[in-house]
Length: 246
Image (cartoon, rainbow, N blue to C red):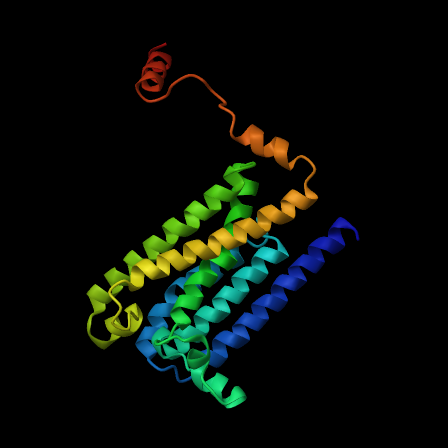
């Protein structure tokens, strides 16, 4: 396949994903459980899609990354439609198998939000890794650790965003958006699950690269070598001051 055909094929794939997501978004925009919560939940989704659309031509991600982002956004839209605490997966499961999913697994609460937080780490840490690899040119150990670190820290930031939004809006909207379902450790568990999802994704990615990449061990070792023995901090400030005065 020529380079031109590859580009066209890649853009066509992205357009198909975009059309599918638009169809999902429109379908779930009708009669949500709580319109205000739906609008609040969609704020970050709209920002994400807008950024992806604006950067698609100059900085296209891989099909794998776009697909993973698409899957996560679809899960998020389901949660936005019903509110995360009210997604009726138990009703759907019971209609198919005659018993609830929670009774099979042993859950006592609606855990759709837990699943999505785990999916956040599992599905989005690879696109984050692609950004680090292509922009910062990270290698070896850092190509797995930094995506994990960003996934964990962004999960923490989202929990702070949820807290701030709930505090600002308050009332039923704040409760619906926060979705703790009475669990005082809800934010901690959400962050932990996102972290576990990211660890799983990076282990899978590392396993694939370990199998396919011939210089994996060399690159890993090189990434952990000290690149500069000169200390930074006050020594670097002194050097920059000397250079400025020169």
